[in-house]
Amino acid sequence: MTNTATIERLERNFWQSMVDQDTETAIALIAEESIVAGPTGVMSLTPRKYEEMVEDGKWTLDSFEFSDVLVSFPNDDTAIMAYKVHQKGTMEGRPMDLNCAEASTWVKEGKDWKCALHTETVLGEMPLTN
Image (cartoon, rainbow, N blue to C red; front, side):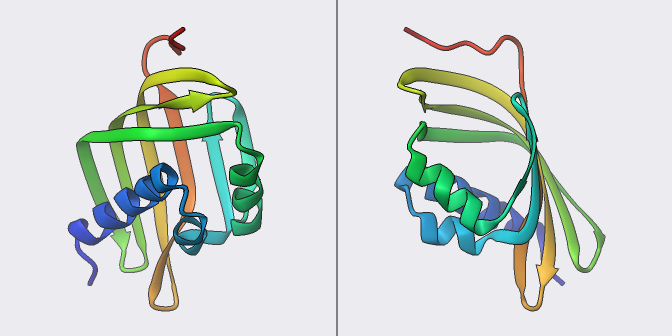
């Protein structure tokens, strides 16, 4: 059975891939049919669509820090991770400094874990620094 540390490592690897702009690592962690929900709405996300978003270059992530991490396993093939994250980067050319509550649902595809759902809620106001 997979342990909590494995799921935390996968989630951190995905975030680090955004900092490193390592699209290959990121798309290897996304389920073929995934859903994302956040401040701008909901969308279906495939590995190819994620790759196109990165190539579009409207955002970058410079750093992130997790806190208050919780992981549960409803069954052997599903893991849910929720946490707070402080993230800094740019969005459409403007600096961003956000505190968010996040949740991801990881599902087993063969021997690999893939993220099938990710949510993000901005805590407080959505501050963009000048």
